Image (cartoon, rainbow over all chains, first blue to last red):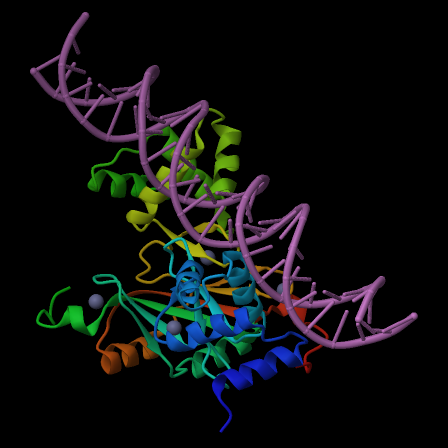
Length: 151
Length: 151
DNA sequence: ACATTAACGACAATCATTACAATATGATTA
DNA sequence: TAATCATATTGTAATGATTGTCGTTAATGT
Ligand SMILES: [Zn+2]
Ligand SMILES: [Zn+2]
Ligand SMILES: [Zn+2]
Ligand SMILES: [Zn+2]
């Protein structure tokens, strides 16, 4: 079977870009941290461990490129930095996030769930939806344990 | 009937803050531009027209305070600046946004629409939802006119 | 009037991101 | 092979939004 990185390489080639060593190192860090939501700086530091000669500007450019190609999505949780999240392969839409206001944990929801809502928006507002961003803020299951009935 | 600004004044007082002239000027700019999504700089320039002596830091401080009190919501459309949006009075949740990728227009959806989805998330992920952020990216009705069937 | 404290305004500092200029890499062609 | 051209990289400087500092002002209570 073709590896994930091979397919990303093809995506780059289709768009006339090359998978340079720096880009490969960056992508591989993203793959290894698929669960996390890394900032550009985070990615830079992690890539540097394997490729110490890489420059911060290159990481920024690579992330920008990957965003353009929809390999990653750029998100913002309001803490002053952009974060980069690998898009599930073949997913039409970006996944959702649960941000805990107690402990700061960020969990993901891969299910779309918005089908009906999007149909309504398309029809009622005559808006052709291409993508979405949905984040819930609240108390995660870990933090909510024990005090179920508190408001 | 009590005016909107009166009620905001009370909210401030309840939290032991005063509605100083600078804060009042800032709130009144927000009320006059309820449809827009102003950045801190935008607000600063508009407030300056009426109160030229106001400082940028004060505007930032006021917006931060209003965010804390949930009078406004701070949002980020990925263009590098935070924007501030008056919350509808009495609304439990923040409204949604339609961002046009053609013309950049930002329209609002005041209807909640997420009731069912939130129920599912609460139940399946055991996550107690306090608020949400939902933004759709796509082609607005103005830009979509005439070429309905294009993908 | 004096003390206390919240809030201001001007400006400096910070920090993420972008722009720049010089160099390197790699393919293409004379 | 050597010259050429395009793309990519690096380190650094510049930018721009936001936050911090600090001396001053305004309101409140004694
Ligand atoms: Zn939590
Ligand atoms: Zn994610
Ligand atoms: Zn449009
Ligand atoms: Zn809005």
